[in-house]
Image (cartoon, rainbow, N blue to C red; front, side, top):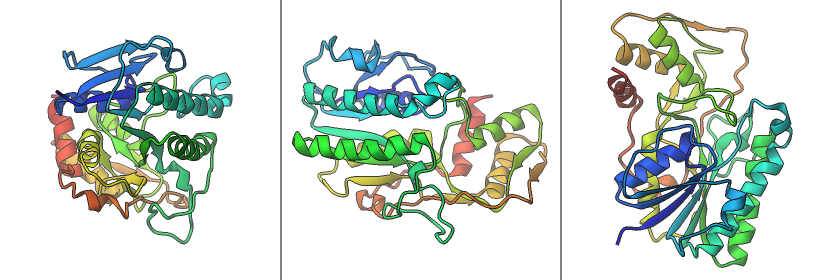
Amino acid sequence: MPKKIFVTGAGGFVGSVLVNGFKDLNYEVHALDKFYNYKINKSPRIVIYKYDLQKFINNIKIKSVDYLIHAAAITNPKNKKIKKKLMDINLSLILSSLNLAKKLNVKKYYFASSTAIYGYHDNILEYDENTKPILKNDYAISKKIGEEIVREFCNSNNMDFKIFRFGNIYSGYEKISWSRSKASLIQKWIDTVNKGGIMKTDSFKTKRDWTYARDIPLVLNNIMSSKRKHPQIINLVSPFIKSDLQMMKIINKNMRPSNISFKENKKYKNKIKPTCSKYLYKFKFTQWTSPEKAIKKIWDSNT
C-alpha cells in the first residue's frame, strides 16, 4: 500500500511542486486548495479537493493519512484588504490544518515556515537554525507565531511534527497570483533573458541560498523515511550559495547562446544574507540539483 500524504495549498507555487513530486515518488497524494494557479499532473494517485481549508474539515471523506504538509499561506497579496488581514488569515489556516491533521490521525505533521523570519543581521555572514529571528513584516511574524502554535498543538496532542523553514526557491515557472503579487528575482532574470533584456540586481556581491523547487519533495521524502525525531526545526535549503553575479552568468550561459548584459545599483547596502542548515546533513540527502543543471533543465523544458 502506498503511503498517503495530504498537502494544503496544493494549487500554489510550493504546494503544486509537492503534489507532483510526491506522486512521482509513488505516494497517494490528497491535494487541497481553493484556487489552483499551477498545473497538477493527472494521475490516479492524486486526489484533488477544491475547497477552502477552513471549511474542508466538515467535508472530509477520507479517514486517515500518514503525513500532512501545511503549505497554504498568503505571502504578498495584491488586494490591500487581504494584505491587512494577512496575519489573521495565515494563523487561521495553520490552526485549521492542525485540526484537520488531528481528525485524519496523521502520523507526522509538517509545517512550511520560511527563512524570512531571520530578517537581517549585520554581523552574521550566513543564517542557520540557531540565528535569532528578526521579524520584519506580517508574513514573517505569521510564520514565527505559526511555529509556536504548531509546537504547542502537536505536543499537547502527542503528534509527531517538524517545521521546515524554506529558503530561496526557484523553478523557472513562477506565476503572480492573488496571494503572491511578486515573482522571485531569479524568475525575473529568466523572464528577462527570454525577452533579450538586461538582468538587474541591487548588488552583484549579494549572496543567497538557491534551492531548486523539484528537489524539495526528494529531500522531504528522505526526511520522512527517517526515524529521527530531532531536530524539529530545519532550514530546508540546498548547499548551493552563490552571488547574484554568479547566478546571472549561469543563467546566461545555460539559457541562451547570445550574451545578455548585467546591471547593478552600486549605491545599494546589502540587506540580504544566505541561509544554511546545521542539521540537514544528518539525513544524508545527496541528490541536490546544482544551479547549472537546474537552469539547463528549465531551458530544455521551455524549448
